[in-house]
Image 1 (cartoon, rainbow, N blue to C red):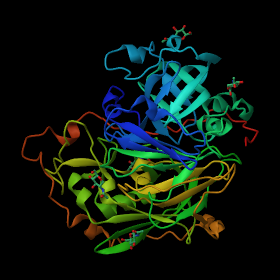
Image 2 (image 1 turned 135 degrees about the horizontal axis):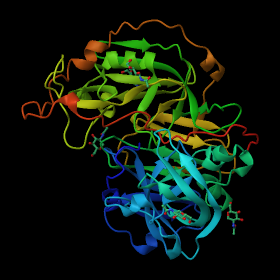
Image 3 (image 1 turned 90 degrees about the horizontal axis):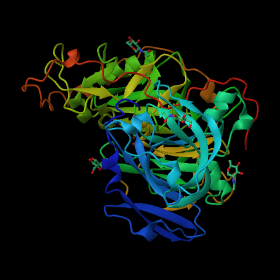
Image 4 (image 1 turned 90 degrees about the vertical axis):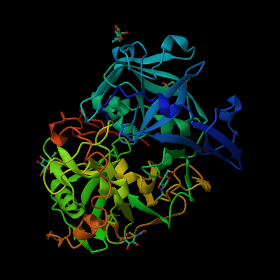
Length: 497
Ligand SMILES: *[C@@H]1O[C@H](CO)[C@@H](O)[C@H](O)[C@H]1NC(C)=O
Ligand SMILES: *[C@@H]1O[C@H](CO)[C@@H](O)[C@H](O)[C@H]1NC(C)=O
Ligand SMILES: *[C@@H]1O[C@H](CO)[C@@H](O)[C@H](O)[C@H]1NC(C)=O
Ligand SMILES: *[C@@H]1O[C@H](CO)[C@@H](O)[C@H](O)[C@H]1NC(C)=O
Ligand SMILES: *[C@@H]1O[C@H](CO)[C@@H](O)[C@H](O)[C@H]1NC(C)=O
């Protein structure tokens, strides 16, 4: 999400520290609240997985990882993004870094002995929210989660309106250069591919555990899965190509159910099966308007023209209702998302209050499921926190299971070899059925009373304190907050891998 660029990221890097345990062919990274000893970043030579803590910056949105770049190493904090595929960093001389409150992390190329420009002026990325970054492609040493990548190609943002860099871990065919040239042959090995090329992991795959909305961090594990971070079995489902090419983690959302103590309803859409992209770089989730409106009615959210988004009383975070997302057809995996994962603050300086209507005087919050006009729809962090997701970019499969929130245990299983399938995962049978659209009917809304009953009126802290009018607030939180890249090119003609 790219709304308030000026917020500093310093606080999330401070005090967040990793420690390593190497042995038996794996390296596990834990989070400790003390500074790292220098040797904490040393690796066992035979390591085949790398885990990096990602911090949840709730208000700005997104997950950030600490890394270093260059020789000697310069510290960086980058946003983790499965919706884009380049690593890029702001140059410390870029305008956005020079103004006050600008970049907390920018790099100074002349301070690195190993910095090499490889593509002058060729880096040019635009995100769905209208933000962008431009400059050179370069290579340098890059260190993430204790893995040192010797020759990493990255973008250097010298013209940008984004005050922090990103680490895009999507398909190489979604790199900015491929979109800009319209040619797959211009794709370069991005982070997960380079980690394989340099022998750090066995196959182009990683797992992401975002953890609870209220937890400060989760992790990304390159090259393996952690069987203690989810419940039940991982189900293996297909990623769908776009015009024959794999460019995003697009899966088939085939059902959505609302359940509460008062009943449960199957929600419907003319867009089923709904092509949805699993995108960690997007804070909220975006579904077709017909089904989004059913969800809002079930949970008690309303669409605000002032905020241009669905909002609801903050007290509904305590609701007993649950939304169940089903993928890949009737035999596919189902992920429950509870209401406490779907109610987010609207502003940093205290919630606005509803000034009229049935929620008058209650605090207003942002709802985690919004509507969007066209495919691809997005399942962002408000969905992804409730799932453990494995991304296999070689077999074009996703492993998914309900997350184990706040799990403190770990059992890391590396992918055994190049192009191995996701370990401990069961393939979903009859996935072809996922493409058959179900009948469209209107839900009975039997779950609706149970979503709003128990919780109403429990969190009204600003009601009496004369907060400014709820909807006189200038527009703050607008649309399309995806870091998914806009593909401007057309004739992509080669498949990598
Ligand atoms: C970006 O780089 C170009 C070429 O090196 C340079 O001429 C220009 O001044 C830089 N722009 C900014 C905003 O730093
Ligand atoms: C570094 O990576 C670039 C881009 O992938 C490649 O062209 C170059 O040959 C590599 N250099 C070394 C020393 O491996
Ligand atoms: C996870 O931990 C956070 C922070 O300690 C806590 O607020 C949250 O309730 C926990 N979640 C669960 C599901 O236990
Ligand atoms: C998901 O929620 C439904 C409805 O409350 C419940 O029946 C089901 O057992 C839940 N599934 C899991 C895995 O918790
Ligand atoms: C979302 O739904 C609202 C209410 O129906 C509508 O006014 C708005 O245009 C929709 N937004 C998008 C992006 O489709």
